[in-house]
Image 1 (tube, helix red, strand yellow):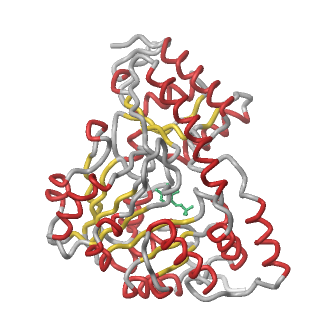
Image 2: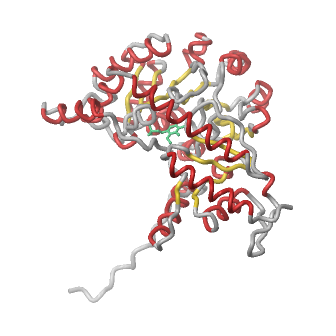
Image 3: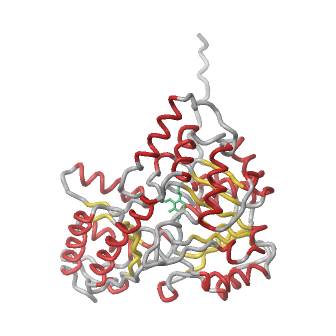
Length: 412
Ligand code: PMP
């Protein structure tokens, strides 16, 4: 044995591309709620972004049949021919759009579709325009891919929708993408054709900017709202638009990890390169299940939207009955994004002053035993998000607790 000691190992160094990034605030709040639950406190968590009902049986059966049939091997890189055909049929049926399989990609969730697109397109310093409030992952992914998120605050006064003037002002020669999400996580706001039109006109005059349209909540809309994709409104945008969608939300399949994208074959091909050198194909069994979800009966999708509507109506009314909180009626998704401006400056029973939406959510968690997520996590304050994809009885108890906790505050 040599006398000489080898040099001591260097501590782990994080790559600089992670400099501004941490694990998501939603996960951190969930972890804190979990800790409290383990300590015997009956916390109700209204933080999760997933439907509370189970994947329909017909879809599960399709997965079981796929396993039995030996559908257990690598598949075509970015989606089986059967799933791409089902996705093309979905776009024809739901959106009136004709895509060929070469214009379709399938990945492990809509999340990976977005990641592949950004990795395939961004050069260091390229800008991506993101209206706030936004799904936090957008800006994080832009940063990982070397781009610069350009955040544009879109407040409740304009229904959390971006205006043409805002878009115009945000675009620079370095802009590569505009990321839109309708219906939105976290605001629940959705764009009507008339809301899209002025934005599309701006984009027609800015031919270097591509549009990423995240339509994952397409089927969760209320009060007869007609979902429309910008590509159907303005066919001239199609040659630079990526539609992002998936089965997670519509079919309660968050754990199966199947998302898909539709766009120009040039972009889809570049995204396949990213996927090829990272994860390869999404799970073969999940793809078989997604074929059944898209081709099979669609009645559960509609039934669930009706369930969600009853919960939305209840939560919005309960929030608006609380002094200091104001909530607009969201058109879709399963979130409310209420203003808590009226609670800022309030004093808690133990003498603390509430200074931000983070403080509001911390108070609701500690004193009210309800976990919600501050608007700051989505880039817009002072708001807080409630996910109402939770059983009605639990929502009723949660809203009782939130109201009681707010009554104990001394408002400024
Ligand atoms: N887009 C939005 C706006 C979302 O809220 C989510 C899930 N929280 C996703 C994309 C990703 O969904 P998945 O990866 O499960 O398909």
